[in-house]
Image 1: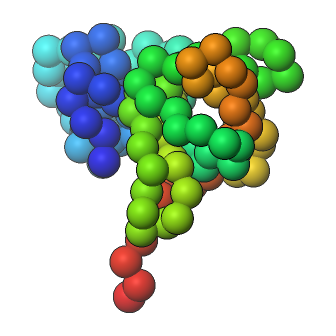
Image 2: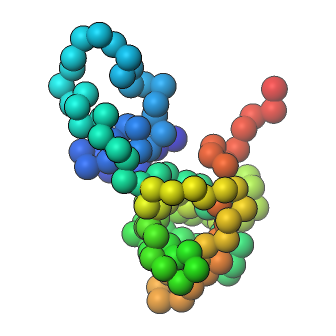
Length: 124
């Protein structure tokens, strides 16, 4: 889930962070902020599975093919998955699951791949 102050804030809209279900844009009534929400989104939130050696934390730069495309908002080692994970905002574009990126962790580029969110789903 998006955490306020990390994945959601006054400068990050509910639509950018993936909370589309909580915002009803098809209402006939206007509401404060609706016009801003209707603007094209500049970034997209993605999940990262860190496959290299390191743990991505908040505010690590993310690179794709050598170009900076975004930054991490949070990250940790997920003991229930057995590997480090992170969430990041990347500039608007298409990032298929499995896309390999690099995360700058303390001046060292660490490999990661785009993974679906949520990271874990309880078995039905």
